[in-house]
Amino acid sequence: MITELAVQAVKNACLNVRNTKGIILHSDLGSQYTSQAFEEYLSRKGIEHSFSRKGNPYDNACIESFHSVLKKEEIYLHTYQDSTEARRAIFEYIEGWYNRKRIHSSIGYLTPQQKEDEELKKAA
Image (cartoon, one colour):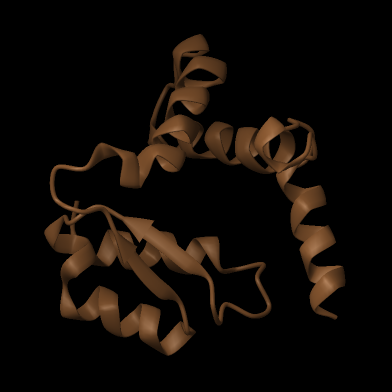
């Protein structure tokens, strides 16, 4: 993966976020994430960058769990004709199902969207 792709992924993730200040982005120590360009973009957006410690898989447990669920509930169940179709399907899974309908015990049996809405109300 190249730095430009990593930066674009963060840009895409921020499209519908009004205020990115204070968001924590957790990544591994790949060169694309430790690059000056990636760090500068996060800094401009007010995003705090968090890294896994070398050799410590528990630092990344949350995203590893998400990837496992994504693979089991979407990716392994479908064959995509091309990367465009895969991107569309994964976006629909995340935004249409995972964030809005799939409840999570770790956040009080709410959906991620419900939890975000709850936190935004507290902050207002």
